[in-house]
Image 1 (cartoon, rainbow, N blue to C red):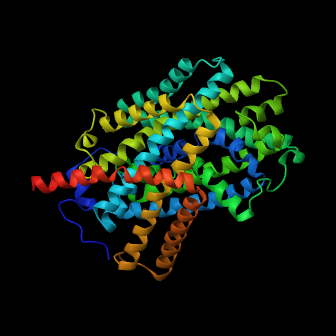
Image 2: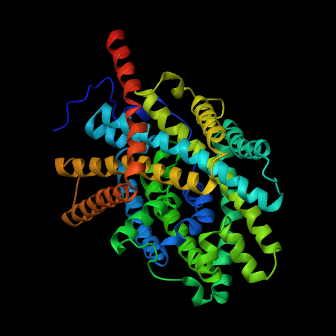
Image 3: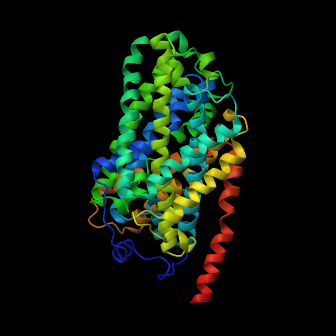
Length: 456
């Protein structure tokens, strides 16, 4: 049994929505675009080379991961029916287990967001360099990464309506070219390029788990509609539909695109590539102009992804701050309805990470940051699945039919096991660093709780 929650610190979802009436601007199309835009970002352009050392096992891992991502989408849709408010992955553990679980979920997710944002911003540099050579000028590279971070931050300051508009446009810009590569490119596939099934030297189960932990980075964002449920019209229905539709569409593009890249670029070249999609397009066109075009698409895709992720990074602490479980400035809304301080904090922390890491080896840095985001992202997934199991075990769902109960239990249990498996696959170093990030938030929680006790 979890410790009883203090009512003053854990308001129910309905009263929260009632005390903060906000205009819900996201319809199904915008919410689906938000999910797709956050899922299809820099990961799809960088990860084929990162997982190439695992050979064809990575394609199997991608298939398993796609199924797991759909399970998570179904889980978040069910949870959003109970709590259709902003903060999703923070709200679910908070309501089920109390303020500390909600805080850990919010802190872990927030950490994942700004670490991921820093990695995405740095990833822009490589694709810009493919179009306009930067000649290894570190100052110029840092300026490009910072610009890639602050431009979408400015769109967030303009308000959620602008975020939604930018998300739809950026999703269209990257989805169409990627789909063309995933279809036309299949006609140019050479099966000799696929390479061995498992050249990593690890056992297949170990290689599968390690590869899936890396590839999860490309599916982060499946929870986007749930986190921003307070901005979604008819959230009880729309969040679940947008999550599943966005995840399925992204998975289709991913699977076809990855197969095309593996079949177009020889395995040895792919493992050493800094721009695998550009190399794949060059293999089709027989020149370099195609790689230049796909590099421009990659830049637009990553900037669009940053646009959505910055909103996610501000929404989670906003919801927690309203309950006194994050510093109060995070609860302030700007004129456009966006938590302005959260956007500033995310942009500043991301810029600091860029300044500290962009001079390091890009491949090693990218891999390390990806695995940390896997751990910090899976913690709220795990807690959300546990929250659904808790509510089902308590029998608090109204008018639950046996068939529906069995389905929801299956989805929640598989989502929990899937998240646990990915955390294990992230490896000791990533789990160690992720736990340090997680525990670093405990003094913040202690301070806030102490202040609340003093004021009461």
